Image 1 (cartoon, one colour):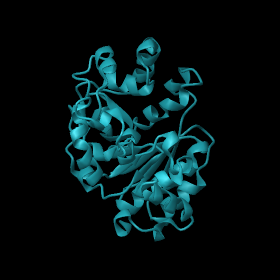
Image 2 (cartoon, rainbow, N blue to C red):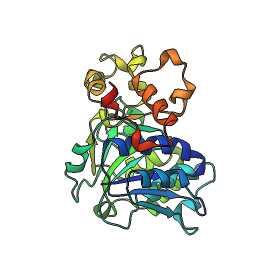
Image 3 (cartoon, rainbow, N blue to C red):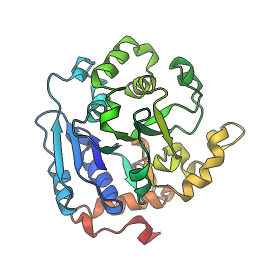
Image 4 (tube, helix red, strand yellow):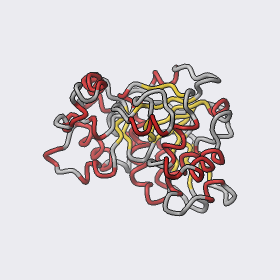
Amino acid sequence: MHLLLALDKSFEHLASVAVTSFLLHSSFESLVIVSPESEKFEKLENIAREFDVPFVHQMLEKTSSIYRLPKDVLPYFYCVEALNQVKPGRYLYIDADTLCVADLHLLTVLELNSDTPFAACSHGRPMPDRSLILNLESPFHYFNAGIFLFDSEPLKNYLSPSRVVDFYLRNQCLCRFREQCSMNALLRGHVQFLPGQYNVLSWMRERQDHHQWHHPSINSMAYCLPYIWKNMSIIHFSNGALPSRVPKERHELMDRYWLLIEQGIGKPSDLPNYSDLW
């Protein structure tokens, strides 16, 4: 399994923390970074070297389909180019604001086949407007971007940068969440849904226990939250929920672990696993 990210230089610091956490907990065949042309990622390359993982930097070509998009939405579609991998294999795509806190062995053995070569996590709460507009099977069949597991070869039968861009440009009024809506529409019926512990979103956090989506009377999937907390593997920090932007008194263990990695990024392989601490 390869570890894959798509980002520009401004997100390298976040990505350094994320990548370190994943390499501390699991083995990967390579670290693949997809970015705009002429950007270098020395920090990420050094981290890969520290863990003895091959580093691969793929730069977007100027002829890429995503450059047909308006500039204000263009960066959101870098991930679509990242999914278009030439080398056959299993890839785990992660956002820069994610944190791994457990072994990911189960993701290496999950069967991906020609009909469902792509796996992601549902939002874990009903999205009735998305299911209606995008013709999804149910309000819970809308997957969240940020954590994708896929087999690169069969995925090409259903998804390509040009297809995603074409769908978005034709249906901008339907795509409230830009590339995420486009991908949900194009991959409808060809997605395996991972348990929520592989993409623990900000609204799922224990500190958000007052949130309406934590009540089974409103969200029938809320009964899964204790299981997700107990077995969490990947936490997905939203921009406003990064530990540096949250008062210290509201920090949970995963916030403290993010800050620990951030402070020890100079010698990442010496950092402890999450389970060694808690």
